Image 1: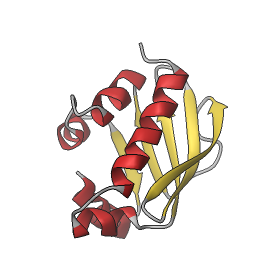
Image 2: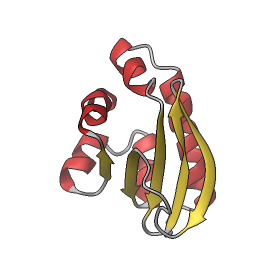
Image 3: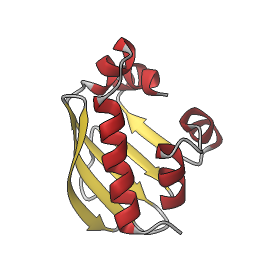
Image 4: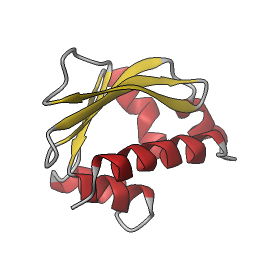
Length: 116
């Protein structure tokens, strides 16, 4: 089982990957300015922050589910987060199968699909 530190590191790596994206569609989707939460279900830990300027800025970590409703909300196990960022788990397939939950407004989902 992935640790809280491994999950935070994976979010940092995901942020770096978004910042280095060459594709215009990915850069456009990552350039949203939205609040973000990632609930790691098996650790019952939530990371909160912002997706802004093509990066994910993790600002806080809380025990339990998200305290506030972020504009973009993710939920998954720690192992799935680490595997997804490491390229071992395809996000679109994990989302379609229910292993990963992504909730956001309709317009944001349309833009975020480019990241999938």
